[in-house]
Each structure stands twice: as structure tokens, then as C-alpha cells.
Length: 220
Image 1 (cartoon, rainbow, N blue to C red):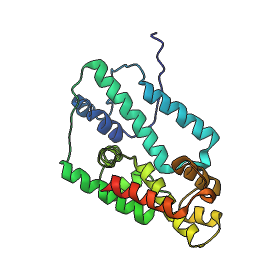
Image 2 (image 1 turned 180 degrees about the horizontal axis):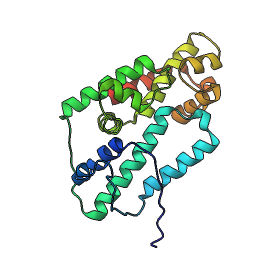
Image 3 (image 1 turned 135 degrees about the vertical axis):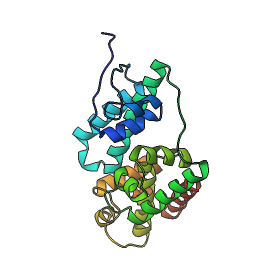
Image 4 (image 1 turned 90 degrees about the horizontal axis):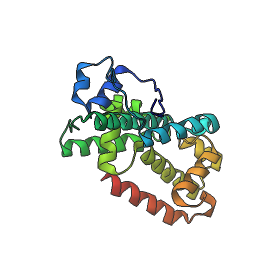
């Protein structure tokens, strides 16, 4: 009636409750229906996220990492939860481990990504290995590194890909597959997006140094 757009996303009740409870403690008393009896205008960032995700699924599905899908869905749900809390005047809560513990979690996630960057990793994979919920891990990582998990993964993949290209370990297609990219076009587009140029147009030494500084500065 008010001209709002409503989008539905499938997620487990546990994940939904964890996300909503971060903004509204009363959700803990509704573990099977954290959004029950709640109506809220769609948050503009959530709406934009849904539009982007829909476009990517139809146009570039083969280039979407599982982690990128997880992160997009979690971000959308989190924005909806924030908007709900604002509309209902709910108190925002800060829970969980101390700042030191958060940093330890972020560093452990960085270590896992550094050793498994060539795999099709999802946030659920990392969170299971660390014994955390996907939403909590995603939030803590961003707080402590300034990056999303997917951004950190792409930086790590690119750094290793440039190392391999610099030492002539294989073709661009082989390097792309070895480093976890969908194909050589995915590697090239990711490199251009992050560094401004495709691999063939880079000073590999400078590019590797910049990526290393980016990862170390944000992960430390």
C-alpha cells in the first residue's frame, strides 16, 4: 500500500535469527520466525543488493563465487534487520567476543583463505571450520579488516596468480583455474576491477607489492 518493494530470501531459521538478534534481542524468543508480525520498508541498500544479485545470477552466473553469493545474501538480510530495528525503535546490540577475539577470528579466516584460495570457498565453509555462524564471521571480518571476505579472497587469488604469471608457471587459463577463478576472463576482469588494468598491462612487481600491502595492512 505504501509503494514498498518486498523481496524474499531463503535462509535457515538459525541464520535468520542470528542476523536479526544482532539488531533486535526479542528475535531470540522467536527462533522459528524472527521477522514474524514485522513489516518494514525495504532498505535501499538491500534493494540495490537484490537487483545486483539478480542481474549477476542471470548474466554472469559462472563467474560468481559461492562466497560472493553467501556474502550478498547475508548483507541483504542484515540491512533488512537494521531497517526493521530503526522502524520499530529497537535497541542495537553489540554481542560476542572482545575486540582481541574478533581480531583472532579475522586472522584465522585470513590463514584459511591463504591456504585454500584455489577452492570454491563459501562463507559457510569457513564458518564451519572456525565453529562460527556465517553471519557472525562475515560481520567480524569486515569490522577488523575493512574488507569483505570475498574481497580478501579475490586479492589473495590475484596475488598468487600474478606470482605464477611472473614466473611463467603456466598459461593464463591454467593460472586462473589453479587460483580459483572461473576462467581466464574472470581473472582478467577481477584484475582490471581491482588494479585498473588486465594482467598483461601490469608491472607485475609493483602490482604484487600493492596487493601484499593491501592484504597485510587490512588483515593485521
